[in-house]
Structures are given as C-alpha cells and as structure tokens.
Image: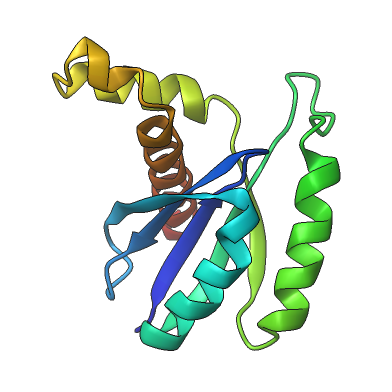
Length: 138
C-alpha cells in the first residue's frame, strides 16, 4: 500500500502529515511555508508512493465554508492538475487546532515550544489524517 498524505492548509504555512504504508497510523511530516507547498509536494510524491491526498476542509460552526476556502480551492484545483493520478479529497477540519493545542499540552510539551505555530499546524494535519482514516474504517 502507499501512504496517505494530509494537508492543513494555511495562509502563511501549511502542516503536513502522512500515514504509515499500512494506513493505520498518522504521523506529522513537517510544516512548510505555503508559498513552497506545491514544490514540496511534487518532490515528496517522487520519493514516496502516495495513494491519496486529504485536505482539511475549513467549515464554520453553521456548516458554511470559512474564509480560507477561497485560497484552498485554487490550490486543490492546481494540485489535481499537477498530480492527476493521485485522488485529492476534503475532510472536515473543524476543531483540529483546538485538539492540536490540547494534544501538545497533554504530551507535556513545555510552554515555549507550545507557542510554535508550526508544531500546531503539523499536529492539526495529523489529527485530520487520523480522523479521515478512522472514518474510512467505520
């Protein structure tokens, strides 16, 4: 099997996570500046087999798309053109930043490290991917 890759797309930086090859466990990959994201992804899929890309779907509590969707949609359209053999799916990302912060605190990460927004983005991508994999198992 190939890996699943998740994207927590942000205006300035984007968190990334990948599954193991058996698609059982999600793990943080890295955080990259959003301007470098496409190049990073194209390079990554050359080195690692990726079966599917999961993009966090930003929704508000009333189920309306958040303002970040106006940036995500063009990115996903471009990604689909550049990587036509890899399906790209959306998965609800509501509360992932809150869950990421809580996870970081519960992991015992020191206060200064918790301020690292890159860590929050990477953990958010991991939560999106783990949630996606669990939803597929049900």
